[in-house]
Length: 118
Image 1 (cartoon, rainbow, N blue to C red):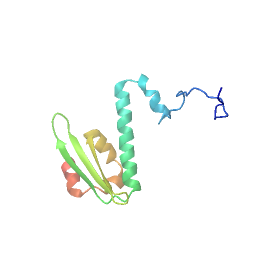
Image 2: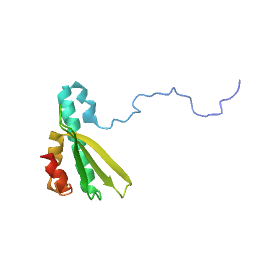
Image 3: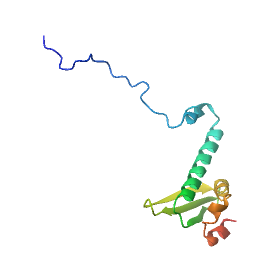
Image 4: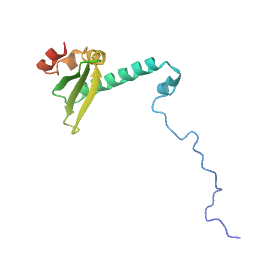
């Protein structure tokens, strides 16, 4: 009989408990109404955009309305030169108005774009 080169006893590989959960709050959202899930997701997206705009070296936000019917959809673009990328996000009117509720964000929007929103 050959001796095992490994000195430790072999254990079966278990995948249980090895996966990280990005957010425990989201893990429990499966039990919520889909409309509540959607609203929370939109809030997270708007917060992420606001944080990224305010923390970065964003000089200008470009906003264009790309759909009027059946629902107004806007394209939001901004560049992060220090990171070398451009972010483009589609938002509905409510999400855009929530984002532009912050004076710091509104100050970065081109005046011509602000006129076209209202």
